[in-house]
Amino acid sequence: MTAERIEDRIAAIVRETLGAPDAPVTEATTARDIPGWDSVKMVEIILRTEEEFGITLRSREVDSLRSVGDLVRIVAGRLAT
Amino acid sequence: MFETAAEFVFKQSRNGGPCLREGWGPLETDHTWSIAPESRLHIPLAPGQGDLLLQILLTPYTWRPLFDGQRLGVEVNGIALGEERIEAEAGLGYRLDAARFGNPDALDIRFHHPDAICPQKERISTDERHLGIALHEILVIRVPPERPTVARSLPPLPLLPEDLGPRSTELVQRLTGLAIPDLALRFESLGHNCEFGVVQRKLGVEPMGLLRFAGIAPHNLLRGLDFGFPQADDPDMLRVFIDSEERREYMIRNLAWGFQSHTDRYVGNTTADEVKQEQVRKHQLYLRKFLETLESGEKIFVFQHPDRLSEALVLPLLATLRSYGPNALLFVRRDSTRPPGTVEKLRPDLYMGSIDKLAPAWDVGNAKFTAWISLLANAYRFWREEGFGA
Image (tube, rainbow over all chains, first blue to last red; front, side, top):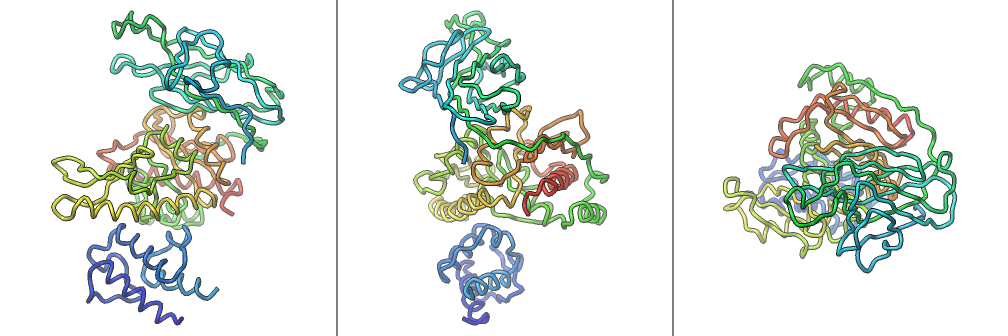
């Protein structure tokens, strides 16, 4: 799966979780950029991403998340191995 | 990971009765009371060699506000181990080095209760006994030998109060090799209240921690860690309630382990059912992450408590953390005799931090942030020096 496709699917998860269908979501997007993106929503985004891609994020990976791009890179790395 | 040398529970229908010598009342539903100024136990040990860790779970007799704690002296096989002041249910721990204690086949434990109270004399009840402690459990485990540790102390970083700017950034980077947010991420809160969670926020990180914003009593923390917090994410064990009529925030209480947290959700904006659904998901991820952190040895655990903490009072906690993996503990206590931010290495994996003020639960935003930076930087330096987190 290409990084673009992963980004598209994660962007869809982010929009759906936050109830913001028109929000611009790019690799650079962070929680500060979209109203309502708090720790509870972040949990939901992580769990939905895990379910979508059939992976489990490690504790260290969760701690390192700062932006959508970080999540995309972790998922891409996992899918590549 | 550790071999159990003895485990005795002092309540009806459990195995503690034969260990009781002078100074104890009969076994009751959950404990047995010490009823004299001195009490004694005889604890037979399973055969084995090496160092032992003696753990004692107890609750002091109190009658607040007049009697808010008890001093307790502990002596094992004729060797005095020290005296603690206990104000609530607690675990006491003592390392019994083979070099000092040999390889005994039993422990003769003497307790001294200088503050034992006669409820009848104090007009509290008709009980004529001199009550000191309610003993719940004695656990003795065999622990690996420890490298000799020379107790060392690191002074606070030379920071001005509330200096969270370039100077602290540069100092922390130079001393630890880490940026301040990365340093803050190397620590995992063990609760008590939100203070350390707020410190991490102030230092620029928002790690997801099961106990980061949780209020939890020390004995519940110890038991929860002992068992791995099963049911911490069980919907039947999570109860949503409203904080106060004034704040109207939904809170979540974990009935299995007695800890509660803020949800940052308010009455009027959402429903209790929705909050519960969110919190179940949150606890699922947080619990999984917490257990992984315990096993990985990648972080230093932080425990702070306003009561007077001592090595004996945190050793059971450290032993439980070590049963998961190569963990280390920074315990932070209020102490006006040392400069705030001082950290002492008591053991390779145990660091005692001093601070002049711990923030009360209702005012954690006024934590002493620069002192906390020193505590974290100093504990991290000891941790790396001992080869942890490699």
